[in-house]
Amino acid sequence: MNIIETHDLCKQYGNALRVAHLDLDVPEGSVYGFLGPNGAGKSTTLKMILGLVRPSAGSIRVLGKKMDGGNRLSVLQQVGSLIESPSYYGHLTGEENLRIVQTLRGVSERNIREVLQIVRLDGQRGKRVACYSLGMKQRLGLAAALLGYPKLLILDEPTNGLDPAGIQEMRELICSLPERFGMTVVVSSHLLSEIDQMANHVAIIREGELVFQDTLEALHGRSRHHLALRTTNNAMAGAILHENSLPCQEEDGYLILPILSDELAAQFTRLLAERRLGVIRLEERQKSLESIFLELTGKAASL
Amino acid sequence: MKLLKLEFYKCRRRKIVLVCAAVLAVELIWMEAFFTRQDTEDLKWGWMLLLYNLAMVDAIVLPISVAALASRNCELEHKGNTWKLLETMARPRQLYVAKLAWGTLVLAALLIIRSGIFLAVGIMQGFQGGIPWGRFGLFTLISWAVSMMVYTLQQGLSLRFSNQAAALVCGIAGSFLGVLSMLFPPALTRCVPWGYYGLLALVGMDWDAATRVTAFHWQWPEPADLILLLLWAAGFLIVGRTLFVRKEV
Image 1 (cartoon, helix red, strand yellow):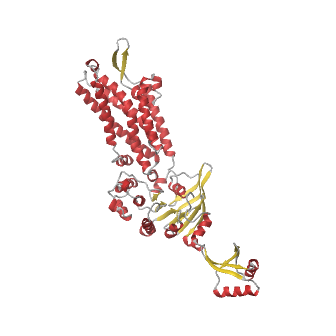
Image 2 (cartoon, helix red, strand yellow; image 1 turned 90 degrees about the horizontal axis):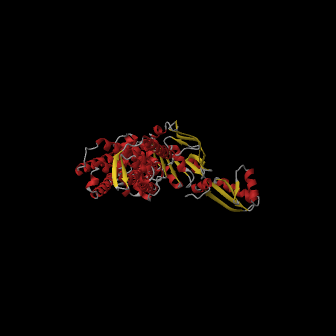
Image 3 (cartoon, chains in turn brown, red; image 1 turned 90 degrees about the vertical axis):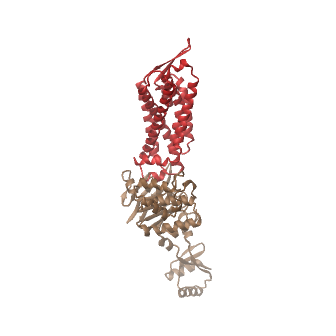
């Protein structure tokens, strides 16, 4: 079952279509990485899912229910969120901040202590949030999102502003949530490496358009090994490959073909030599995730 | 009710009591300074003199005070980027109403205490005649009603603009226009929201240029002015609430 489904979701600001015909399917129990360069429309999409921004077109279903003005808040009772920077009252303590969320969500007071322990802020609960570091504020934001133990957690760039240790800690925490609490986590990032370490499902968005959506394994599948061959006559070599039912395509002066067994590769090079074709290069290559991301988004891997 | 309680909870350590105490202190000092300069002849007007001047002091002090209170209450949401959290748990119009209800109660408490203090001042000064309980009550109600109209305007501005300078400048301008409008003809005063402190005053003044004698008299607010006050408040409420509810976070 999909916990979030969007169909033909669009958001237009003036003449610019910031989110274009997005069809997202977030499977229940997954850590769903929502990846895209800055300004791709990730935050706008997540805000539309939460009903904070009105879609220009399209529909959204969350937890099997269509999101509209009437049932938005009842659906969101089971959704925790941390959008962009954390929300907090600087003049109140961490515990007082959570008490506000606890009152609004109508959950048990006991949850406050528990979530503070989960995000490891229990030692700082009596301190004013204005005196917290950015990492602590981010963890407080996560605590507020976790407070009602929601079925769905939406985190927009949760590691922003964290130091490497904080990023590692946040990542481990996010990864543990589906197993510990049965939550589905949607986490957005502009960093491929981050999503690669957290998510098991991935969507990639570019200029508001969905360019990839599948499991992380499927994305890795695109980075499979292949052979790159350069000969004295690539056209003839290509014809020989086809004669032997070996698929290939020419790319930047190389013939790209699938990985061959050692025996088959030796047999093939012998065949080329018999036809008086010289082998200049025969390389084993692997497409990195970064280059796949680059291909999909048309931008650098970490933007 | 839950949201209203939370408004008070959120305003912990926001020095709201200090702001209210400062308002009372300024009004008290102003009035004390005024009464110490009056001779026995003037003081015989007693309660009328007090309520006439209190309406004038309100016109100067309350617009900026109301702006400060609305700003203190709304700024904390902008500062902490809390709209996107709150609006996943409550409807924007509920948040708007809770903030307005907070202002209603704070202003009611402030103005009741203010009236209590000045009643005590009047009694201590030994003003002639009986204590005008009814008129004092009505004066408090009018001060609160006008302040609520101004608060509705200020809340709209404070919610709309994250930079509170716009709202506070409006409050300062209101203080200036409030007192200045007392010199305007009534038709023009009706066009100035802050002018209603003077327009709805319960005491009128007649100054005889020939004898240079000032006389005071009780008066009742014009029903048309009360209706206009309601219209102003309704206008600010509808515009402020619509802008807030429509704003995407």
